[in-house]
Image (cartoon, rainbow, N blue to C red; front, side, top):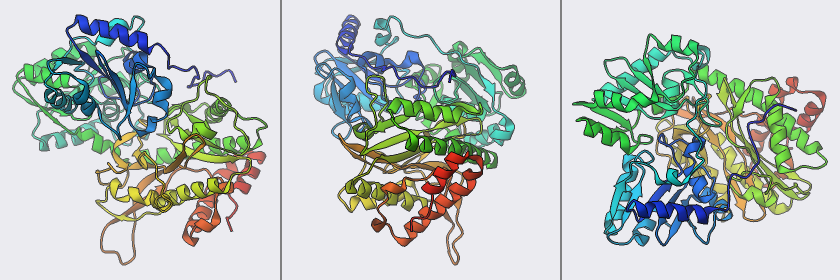
Length: 603
């Protein structure tokens, strides 16, 4: 195919960390700084950032989606979470930069142990939230040192060919897919704002901006975002400040009765004008401390708390749910064709699989993007939780190995995310045992019934129980929220030890327990689920459960039947029958024959 793909395989990491860190240290010394904090962040705390904000990757070579480097005169560390235990040491120059796991220490503790008394640590106030800066301040003060905000990021001074600001098209998101007009959304947001006794809300999260005003953009990869801000006063017209000047006329017409449109360059002065004498709500999760400082300098009160849009956006309406189901049906057809293709391939490489899956999804011309770079890990690469194949790491999938593919798509109707692990050749008994324990955890979440008010933390253990029985576990959350043609990783809902937000009907989450045997293989099984009311005969409390949205079979060759209960077998058979009935009429003869075999009853 000649279609330009959404993914490339050139390794964006590098081996110039020593030179670049040395150059940065020279700039820091000239500015009177003894160290600097480099988070993987842009001014909106986004998961996917524009190329010019990839400072951490440029400086260190680490390309993960989360991490923080601290560069001091005589020491430097890269702090990452459990997803990057293997990736971080492989990508950075460990002679210059020490990878540190969050399980061992955090950024603040490392600073406290290495920053000297009387030294000055710098930070960019556009890349840290007020809470984040407060943590840094406590660590720095305990060390007897000083924390200083910088006017210009010193990494930019040594990044000579730094990419410019993005300027993708900004378009209207149709009402038929959004399900609620922007003026109705703004009314609900203002009602929540009034309850918080705030005069205005600064919308700093581009996801919330897109949802509130029914717009979508193209300023970052894999998520249809338009970067920028909005000021939403309680009793006045809101103003949008978009980074891109490429605004579709249809969107301009739709916004004209609701809001003013201005360039991003006008935002700072506008914030000064509205802040004086007013209480302004800032989003604790995404608003930079630079915004707080600016409001307070203008004589306003900056109240940091949750952006009410985040909770409103998390509960999907009927149109968004219908669109998500349609997206999963379309995606299911593509994934089944891909799985059949894998089983019929004479030779298979990780890159070839990524390309084939994207090609299957693109047929019909409705694919907008992948929702994240596909994780295509064979054998030992499957044990790297967020592995991203490059031309340097690409390997052939050999008989006797497991092959893990975690992927997703962006369609105008909705966002998908699915992981399947398949056997190539004959699996070992240990592989089948581990796969089945992960599958049991997946089924436990899918079948869960719980009272209204239950949090994700309260059911996270369901996914781990079968692994715990064998002395095993996994180091990531069981599930994250998912948007409606927005972010594949959406909050505030999650199924994890840190999932403290009650689950509500209409929320969409992933269900993805896993197991990773370092140096050998990884197993992860992921479907998306919709929280729905669940009637219990004779029940005394409102209950909730999950509807599974994803449509694709699990590899029967990896299921150890003796580990499954009758109820678990029945769930798999019913799920497979549903997949076959929904997708079968839309497959060609070869793919249908494969699906019939892949979904036959376990008994």
